[in-house]
Image (cartoon, rainbow, N blue to C red; front, side, top):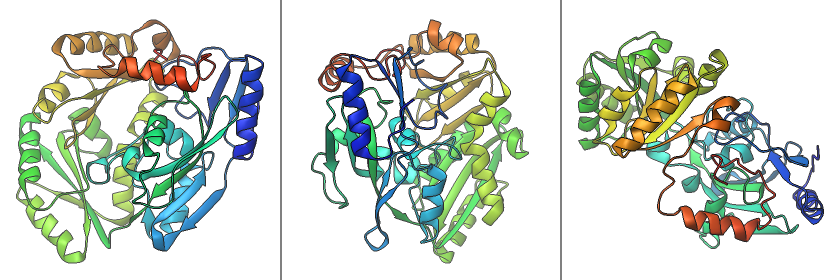
Length: 382
């Protein structure tokens, strides 16, 4: 295994391997090994784990540039010292690298307010199979030059190039933050409450919907909305008053709040650790479709209720494959996002990639014409 410690060494490692015609397995800490497609056997493995620098940090400018191998949890801790954050809330945060989070386009509950990696990444450098280091974007929040190239890397699972460094637009932590759980007897009631929240003046940072199987992990085996609100003390008190109108409400602060969201954010890793043959399906739907999608899952469900991203949990991957087949029939957009190798080698993981699929294949041919990088990693289609 090759473990370059600088972006230049990373580019050179790729150039040497490609020059020999070797297939390449790119990875960070491999926390998401069961995500997306199974990596085909490769001639050489290259890891970014030794790229751990903080390249540039400007707290007053709300920007930071770090190497791709820096641990995500280290990035969070460093920023927290200045009450700043990159609020992606990815799963596997304890072991994931920055590059891994970005290449998988991981996000969590607060995408509702802050967006995904495509909203928070303002630039990056990437190493190509030609041995070049390409700079895209910059360290200025308003700089959009070359940003589209950075966006191509986000969610590409290392199939185009190796992310070497990432530049983030930072967010200040709220002065006061409080979270709430509001239980309901049915999905319909929870979705109706979601609708009333979206019509209101106050907009929470997170609106997650949990079904009883998922909410049992926080001691509340009912349909529930998990809400996260921040601002000054007066604003948060107003949030609490308005949320109380939705019904019985439990408030969480400080360590209890952190524990609540850790349970939500890490539900996928915990589920996969407990179910060797389990699978996780991600479905994207309109807000109107949300109720139909979440009630179609037979097991636990967690949904980003204000953005229409739903995660369904299956103890057996064959049940996930059957659900996906029915979802395609209904016209829903869905993928098997996590599954054991036995499933990922046999089943269709991404049945309907969309109208831009041909463009994606052309982009792959531009960056990696010999198809050397992370073959099969993009849901076995690239």
